[in-house]
Length: 505
Image 1 (spheres, rainbow, N blue to C red):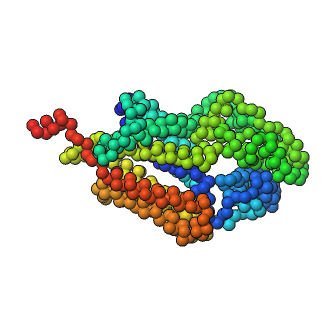
Image 2 (spheres, rainbow, N blue to C red; image 1 turned 90 degrees about the vertical axis):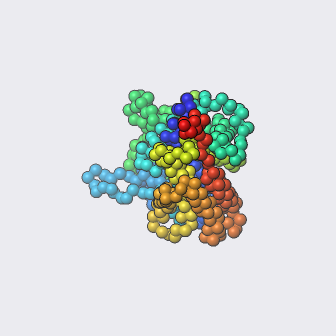
Image 3 (cartoon, one colour; image 1 turned 60 degrees about the horizontal axis):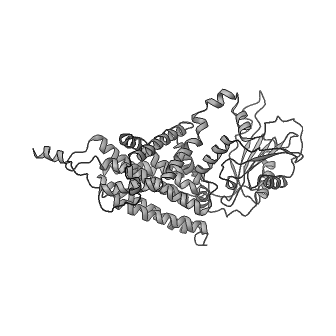
């Protein structure tokens, strides 16, 4: 079990570190996006009014679309996001009939497109967390394999822990390798339930992709499974007869009353057709279960057509597990608690990788190739990734606001910085590389509040979000400076007694 624990943790450790770091940041995905778009003020519009404003805009730009998907704002998000599904080109007509529409970002109050810098915001960390910047579905498959390794490492780690409760209270400082072992044990044992739940629920999140065979065997079309499992309304065909769309705001308010929570999403199918339907889904913040219940109305009369029936035990379980992983139901206090627990996962994986090298380093002995490789990968990942994440945030403030393709440029800044750090550290001795990269990361995070104050007026105006975000960046700078001092002090492991006798002989 100790062998399994060590090798499972090592093989997947570098990707797990990146998944934990970006996944932990994703607890504040909407807040990061708002910080990265300082031109947008906080939302003060009710979901029903935001839906009506979005529909007015879509009537002007896409009245003949097949569907409108509208993500409504809440207390954490400041904009309405809409996506159009254009009508397909007629048979024999030139394709495409018109360019594929991109996601639109609208002002909740007016429905007009927002004038803000282009950015992926917190969505970048969220997507990287489970897609690893790889094409679909390979990134998700790789993330799933790493999660399976993590689950195996957790189970084998519990089995090998002889002093699991004692280790909860043991943290010795300045004791070399023993201190790093204590740090690994404390970070693992302190949040063991969290680590187990977050790993297992991460696998459940994509279980339909990993294990599609039951659905494939029983449903000729996956959409049919979704309709039965989640109570979705069946698709209807357009009649071709024009009919005006009813007022949207009253439908949303009625759905909120029926569903017992604020609306989070709106889907309008076949707008301006006699067969139009409007489906209102409850926001995820109203319940631990991630998938909200919905109600479907006639788009021409406003009559209620169907509502989600109470889900069965299996679907409820899956929804709760997904909700526990996403934590969209969490209030500010619980969200910060989960953030700290996520950081403990980052520390657990990082200290585990450091222990692998510390346990195999011998004073006076030439490191073997595998040890040198793991050590360099440790430095590149543990010290290089935070530097890349800071570069992503700094690029948001330093790149021109109207620059074409700036969202991709921000992401490129993260990976170019991370890659450059991974290469440049090879030119330095390991202890110096640890110190230098962590120092650069500390400087980069410390620079974020300064650049933010110079580039935007929101911090000077006392905006609570910006004050909290920049304070967190300053705390991150202090943490990296502290980590740099500790990581550079990993001593060589003592030579075993038998090895000393052989060397003396």
